[in-house]
Length: 281
Image 1 (cartoon, rainbow, N blue to C red):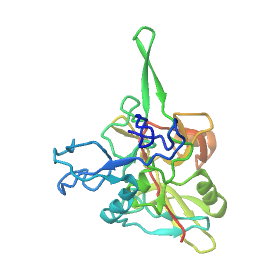
Image 2 (image 1 turned 120 degrees about the vertical axis):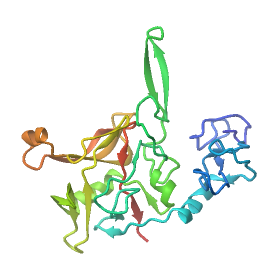
Image 3 (image 1 turned 180 degrees about the vertical axis):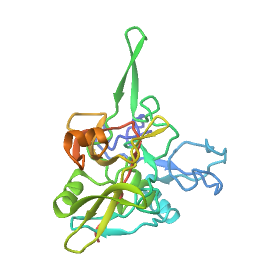
Image 4 (image 1 turned 90 degrees about the vertical axis):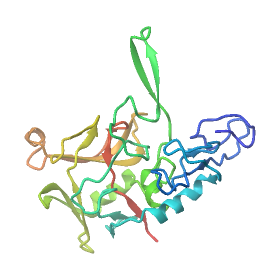
C-alpha cells in the first residue's frame, strides 16, 4: 500500500503512517463483472488493472469504507437477532447458515474468505522463517490488532455490514452471566441452548467442530466459537467459546463435559464457525 502522505510503501494493515503519523485510508477496488466470484467485494489492490479471478478489466477505484454498504446490499442476512440481556443482539444461526442447527461456514481468524483447506502453511497473516540451514521453518504471525471487531479483519462486518461484528469475550461473558445454559439437541444435532430467563429468548450453539486441513474434526461433540480478541499469550491464539462433551472429556469434567470462554484456546489457522452479533440501536 502506497502512503498518500510520504509516498512510501507500507503494509496493508497500517492505519497510521510511521513517517508522518497521519491516518492512512487504505483503498481497494472491486470487480464490476456480475458473474465474478469477487463482484462487489472491495478486496483488490488499488493499482489493479484486471481482476485476478475472471480477468475483467477494472476501471474505477473505491475506498474500502464503501465496501461494507455495498456488501450489505448484496448479502442480506436471513437470520434473526435476539436480545439476550446484554449489550448486543445475538444471531440465531452461524455465519453462512440459515437454520440454527446448521454448521455454516468455517473461517480462520482474521480472514474474510472461506478456504478448502485451513492450515498453518496457507494462513494469510504469517511469515515463514527458515531455520537450521533451511531444514525447518518457523511461523511468525502478524499483529493485526488486539481486537479485530468491526475492522477489515472481521469477517462478520465484511459480509453483513458495519452494524454486525464478531463477539468479544465480554459479550460471551454476558451470555454466561445473564442466561441459563442447557445441553440439548436441535434436529438431531447436539449443542448448547442459551436462554434469557427475563424475555425467554433463546439461541442454539451446535457442536460443529473445527476445520483442520480439509477435514471437519470433532463434529457432534465439540464447538469452537471465536471472539474478536487476541489471547493474552500472544500472537497465534485468540479467546474462544469452547465446549466439549466427548466421552473422554466427560470422564474428566462430568456428565456435561467442558464449557467455558477460554484464553489461548483458538489457533488462528484453524477454521471455526462464527456466531455474529449486531449492535443494539
